[in-house]
Image (cartoon, rainbow, N blue to C red; front, side, top):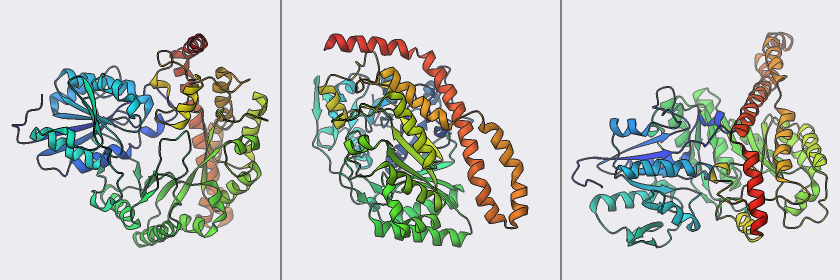
Length: 524
C-alpha cells in the first residue's frame, strides 16, 4: 500500500529486458528508449518525488544483474525502496518480462503503472490481471504527473484522462486524452535519470506522429512538431554536459515539415562549426527524398552520417501491392544518390509481407531471396535489417490477419516472439512459415559474413598507405572509413546471426511452430 505520510517518494520506471538475445542486443547496451526518459523527466519536476529509470537491457558495468537475467529488483528495492513502479511496454516482445516484474512488485504491495505501444484497449484486461494497477494509453508526460499526484493525495483517478484500472472487479476506462501539441511546456529529456546505463547513442526527437498510415505500424496520427530550437537545445546540452557525440533522431520521417528541417540542419551545422566538432547523427527518412539535393546537402553539413530507409521490398509486384508508388529501378537510383552524398545507408526490409492482393505474386521462394540479395548489392546498401512481419496489437495488419484466422495462438507463439525475428502467422501460399524464417536469415547472411574479419585487418593496415598516396588526411579518411566501418559491422553482424541461431535452437522454436500450425488448422 502507498504510504502518504512520507516526506519524499520514489518513482522507478523500468524498461524490461529482451526475452533472449536478438539483433537489437548489440545496440541496446549503448543506448536506451526515449519514451521512458521523457516520462521520468516530467515526473521528476514534481515536488516530493525522486525518479529513476532502470533499463534492463543496459545495466552498464555496475548495474545489479540477477542470476536469471534482467535487473536484481530485490537488491534495488532493498537499496532504494520504490513507492510506485512504472513499466515501459513499448516493445511487445518484452511484455512477458514486464508482467513478471509487475507481479514481483505487486507482491510487495507496490503500486504498478504500465504504458507503451503494446497497451491498447484489447490488451487491458490481460494487463490488469497480470500485476498492473493502472494502464496508461498514449503519451504519458501529462498523465503520469496527474496520476502520481492523485495517488499521493488519495483522490479519485476517474478524473484522469487516458487511463484504465479496476474498480469493484470491473475495468474503468477514463476519457481519452488528446495528443500533445505544445512540447515547449515539457522538460527536456534528462538522461541522468537513467541509472547504471552506458550511454553512447542518445535518442532525441522533434516530430511525433507519422502521416503515412502504414497498416503494420502503431505510429498514427497527424505529425506534431516541436520547434527546431528545442532539438538544438537538447543536442547541445548533451554535448556540453555528457560529452555526447552520437545521436539517433527517432522521428519516423526526418524530412517532415521540410522548411523547418532545413532550418534545423543549418542551425546544427553552425553549432558544430562553432564548437569545432562534427557530430554523428542517424535519421530515418523516405527513400524518395534523394530527389531533394538541397535537403541532402543540408543534412550532411548538419552531421547526419547514417540514413535508415524503409525499402520494404525490391520486388516490383510487391511494391505495387504495397502502394509504394516506386519501382525497384527508382529505389536503386535513389539509394545510390544517398551513397554519393556520403551517407551510410541502412536498409530496412520486410520479407514475406502478407499482401491484400496476391495476384501475380507466384514467385518461387528462392527467386525472391535472389531479388533481395541482388538489390542490396546493386543499390550499394551498407547495412541491412531484414525483418519478418509482426501483427502488433491494435494495428490494421493484426486485425486483418485475425479476421482471416492466420495468427498463431499465443499459447504456442507468445508475445516474447513478437520482435520481427520469428514467423507469427501463416504466410501467403505457397511459402511456409519455416521458409519465410530461413529466407530472412539467408538474405542477411549474404551481407554479414565471417570473411569481413580479414577485411578489417586489411583495411586497418591500408590506412597509412591511403593517406600517403592522397597527401590529404581528410580525403584519405573519407576514402578509408566507409569500407573499414562496413567490414567491422558486417563481421559483427555475422557474430550476431550466429548467436541468434543458437538462441533459436535453444528455444526449440521449430517444435513450437509445428504445434502452432496444427492448432491453427484445428481452429479453422
